[in-house]
Length: 248
Image 1 (spheres, helix red, strand yellow):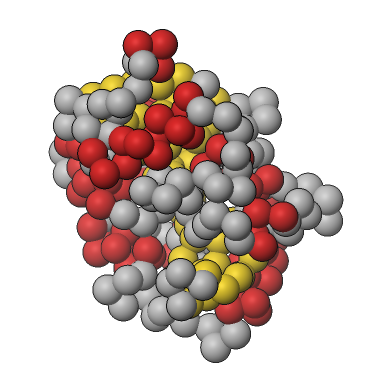
Image 2 (tube, helix red, strand yellow):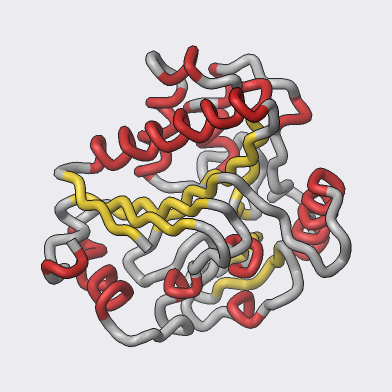
């Protein structure tokens, strides 16, 4: 696990975009596909806008990039709360992407459980997985909420108990809504995970997550520990203001 502290959220997003471009260069060199998982939130939105502009846009072989989502709200894709919708408006719509390169979660499905099963089926089809296998994403972008949640893995939720499914739908009492999310074993099979955390309101939680005891039911982001992969925390000065020198 590596932790980098930046002066502001814009520099966090810029560093995250640099990682994307570097992984894309590796794709060109190895003539393979790049599988990227996107998330919602303000910091990823900054990242999307950067990637849609120069110098990143022309430096990335977009036809070899396949996009996935870590979680989704139960709303249509054009809804203001849609994670796909935010990424589509800021990034995907600005690119000439083959339709088959975009693998969104169908949050508008009348049955969230079916939507989660459909997404799991899509993942297994695309990656050619057996029943017991998990996809190997090249790059995963995640954030952390002020309560320690990541994606739609919320404190105390039943989704934290899942070990075999790739994606699940569950009711989040505090939000009064269903959420659809990849499970933590799915995230932890990734080659590289970037956790982007910005904002002073997250400082206390971030200190507990990184320097306190392991309490994953309270702070689900602690479950994100890729097996055989990299974990990088990119945080801004506000979020990291309470961290001790050993974490900086």
